[in-house]
Length: 452
Image (cartoon, rainbow, N blue to C red; front, top):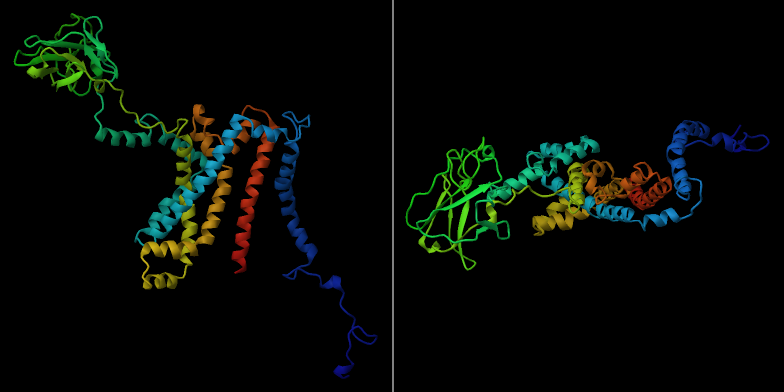
């Protein structure tokens, strides 16, 4: 039989294949088999994602108990209640600041570590916080930001630097003995004598308010100053363990106060000053004759305890810093991966054309990394939208309202004592609506990258 007589679909030819038998997937698998394998995933997706979203939208239209339909009232409450307005404002700060700072740091780290021999070790150290859970990181930074410099690392560093440049008081709780001393409070924490001093008549300035066993170092016993030229006197602790002695007099065993500054004041102007020695004595020049004696407030100022990191003013920036510490490694690794794919010939061509390193970085490296930077930035923006653990753990109770964000407000409204599941569901829906555009941008970017 010749090939010309072979026909398809004719009376004497071969039957045409049915459309049903040829309908297969790209990989050659029958459609019903593919659907069967996808069915468990689709069921889980519907149970864990689609149903909760639908139920939250429905629940947000009802009151706290779920029995009364209130329409959009829960959404109106979000933008009229002080606590939720604070949460909205702080969430906006988080979205605007945290992802940008993390992305910039990641870019800097990725570029710089390419030029150092120990770059791999540095990347490992920076990425290591990613292995720590948010709960553990919150506990770590709660301790770091402790107000007491003996416990909080941040304030230990701050106070060490401060005390290196500013003299701190060694007698913060000392005060004059009001019964026997003519020193009176004169503003700014200082004490000034009501009378004047004369040459040849020692000035005795007794102080109380501190225990002898808390004096710094090994204090010496106080002694009466020797007569000499100028004005002399003694500053001492008019108290000794076990009691006894006469108030206003230097008794055996009473301790000297070393390093106290004494000023001679005439007509509101300081004419001379001196500092007490190890035995508590001081000597002022002859110009101090007839002057009042003043102990400046610097002698009694409370010690510098650092910065109130978790106070109402700094609590949000402090928590953002902890987030940056955790996620800078994530941004660095992704950007470094993108940087590894950059054509080095373009960088060398820019250098040959006379561009310096800053110009190469700004006009060549950054534009080439723009797709990666956008993905990192958008991913972090989605991440900070649902930030909860760090704020809940780090912010102390008095400052938690000032550090509030939408995810934390959702928890507090629904489960943290509020019991208003309607408002909580409305906050969840708003978070979903805010995240959706960012997810769309990310997916669109990934799709474009896949099509290249």
